[in-house]
Image (tube, rainbow, N blue to C red; front, side, top):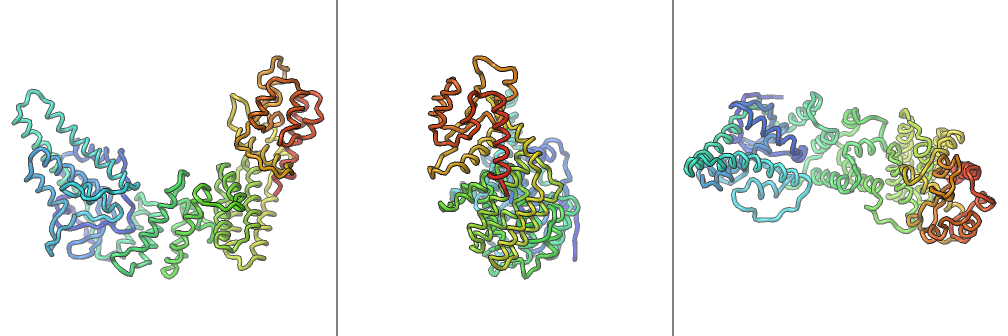
Length: 568
């Protein structure tokens, strides 16, 4: 590997070559904090020859270099030069504007006009709306990168304007002196930018660049697992045509799927979950090492295609509204919505494996439903009610059975794996006494609403179990009613300890709720027995509604929930 390292000024870099941002690089991602800091360090407080770190490139041709490290800085510097050029032009210094533009766009040896910094991911926004000297010819749709570029460019223009406004607002200067001072200030900003110093590292070829790219990450550079995996895949999947970059397009599709939901999904976590659903157990920290060892050049394309398909499934799992479900699939949708409402993700590799096999028609609906319901019920008891903490065993269990399901050859094998997983979950489930102790603490009042959703879910599931009428009930439109009122005319001494507990709560429709009002217990019972919701024997047999009946009903609901409704 031949490496050339030189001290260089930014001006020399922009004068002596063209720079291409290759497909394995990240989009522009600097935000206000980084742009402000760069402006402050390089313009406001720096002397000349300010050092901004290293720039690493590899040679693509005599004039063209691919950027390995330094993309964010070179893009920001290009925007600074574009803004300075435009202010020169706006203030009437046309020759100075053209002088700067030579560092932004110039003719190559074939006399073809080219931008010095060439980027594909933000095309055509960066070229048309920032680099171009004239007005843009096209309107551009804004994605995440375009939005970041626009915000950064607007901020740079704001900083320059503030400097010029200080001069223009000085009433002691004549108009001629103001013009001279404006030119001097723009020259000063331009020269500080062009005199910035870097360590310019040049490599002979692209393969060396990939090695350096990975090495930089191990030495503290801010590169994510996703960056490294993308790098490895694009390195090993060569495009058939230099004008068509299928791997880059597929990776963009993956990112778009992960970013196109309101849920807070991350590409690194997605990659880890995909890996755990197919390969040996690992962590985010060691994922790339495992990936590089196991995914050969021959397997790279197949792996990338799998990621594309999995990114859609992954999005549907976390945000069920992004998929059009058939009517008979609503039970799958409901299980996923509820499961991820518990704010737990340990099960994701297994869920991903289930939905992957189901979507590929290798796993029957009945088995997919059974598996998802078992996981839903497990985390209702394990996570939502008893708040158990896993030492890693649960995550490892899911990863193990996700891999087994992915490798299963037939229906019998898949059935055996799902039944075996259910047995493993049964062995890990908290005891009934642990469940009851936590169940008794469930509470909902006007002043305490944290557990409202889990109480609604619990009561609606129990009601569904008992509802044999066949009439579908919309539980989302129902309210939680306190059978013992929150503010009765006469409070018992222990009232505040019991009225918010689940044994005192019932889901009813708004009309029934209004009808109950502050009626006597006998009148309430008469109304409740005419509703479509299930009224248990404790309510039916109670001659009065006191803390004793509430505690008795709490225990009864716990038994039904643990032993029947949420049984795995």
